[in-house]
Length: 188
Image (cartoon, rainbow, N blue to C red):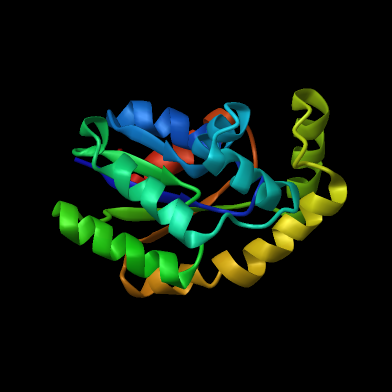
């Protein structure tokens, strides 16, 4: 059983590393970004609401996100092992996650944070925007999302550090190099 949270600013490689790590630990990759994008592409009511926030580089409101995460963590493939990707992003969401996990009789084992140079993040996201055509990856929105991360999500790091859960990992380099650092940090 391994229950993890992966954090880092947009463009740090969380999704890429979380997918690979989920396979290595035999757990579910629980990505709020993937859930939001699936709902947007299917034009669900939730997807239409989420699209407005995502296009502006803002976070989707907590009540929507919390309900989706609670439902996802209760599914069979996430009962034993999971890696959360994109949640929690605010101190209120940390409290909600604590309550969700307590209700499920679970705890987080580790919180990984990928540390990447700010300008490298911008370059990565601009390159991704060119190759994938993501409407939420214009340069202005990318820079705004970085600011939102610093203001709203980075303050969670001390909470997890105080709990003894935080593992900082250098997110610069190839995907394989970063994956090896993650495995070292987790003792895998």
